[in-house]
Length: 191
Image: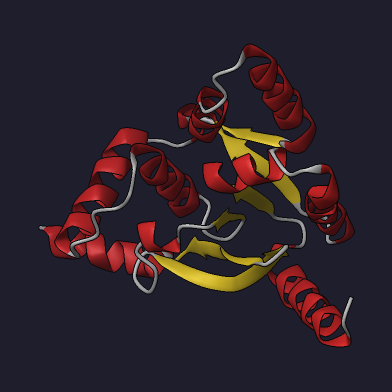
């Protein structure tokens, strides 16, 4: 591995550990799918994420909605079983709607704010993830390949963008957290 890549990796680990140490890190469905389906030559990506989470005392998790969406994407029964085993190993924390008061009301509020700002890409599962993030703004972070589905700069802050290099392809993963003040301000503007 090149010296530049090693330096980038060290900087990311240092920067992220400041934010994530002792916190929960939830992964979007698209990231979970990539992590669970890597080939033998790419298994180090998943192993590195587990290792990183352990080194900085970060707790990986998923929501019930991401779990369902992730498992539904595996049409073959054997793949479904493998995906379930992956989730059982990976997710140390499971979040559900009963963990958040007024879950659906908050989901509708976030959807209205998104509509007001002409953000149309957020799925049902994205909205549920947004509610969890807003409920735990200082202890829950989210990794996604779809930053565009979240109203960053208003409801969410981008903590880091992580380049993931696989062969000749580079994918960018965003680590975001809730901006509680932005949410309160935007909710107040709804009337």
